[in-house]
Image 1 (cartoon, rainbow, N blue to C red):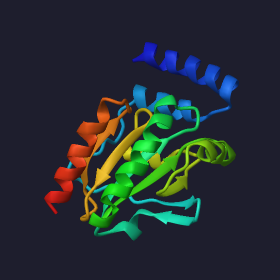
Image 2: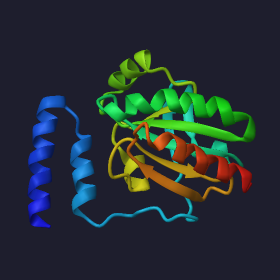
Image 3: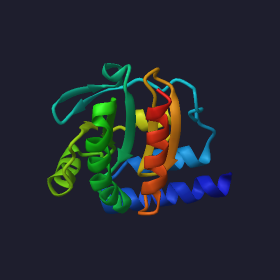
Length: 179
């Protein structure tokens, strides 16, 4: 455990120095301590964050399926996930499916620059202190959580690769059918 904490401290310092991102310290904290982890069928933590078009409140999506995606501008796989999320949102929005992408950049401008080249056709919220990610027990980026109409967690997923698309869509389709 001490070795992991030391490694995370070094990594956190180095990356903050290079990127100016405090988030790594929080992620290392997640890796090196016992944290709250969401349980399938357990309630999702609520949040109320500033967004691209006003406040984004999870409570406003009660009765709907919500795919909450945690991302940052420096995250390569996040760039790959945005076109897929646009596609999935368009495909299933009529069935009560919504996406909220929570940006974790320390500076909101960095997230906005990312969105200029990787547009989002779904809700985007900004959480520069990472409090929402901590409440969800997020361990890496991108990470996503599907929440059901009852506010309970259906599944969690960490990372994003081309190979994940079919599996994630299948899980979403299954959840929508079980409604």
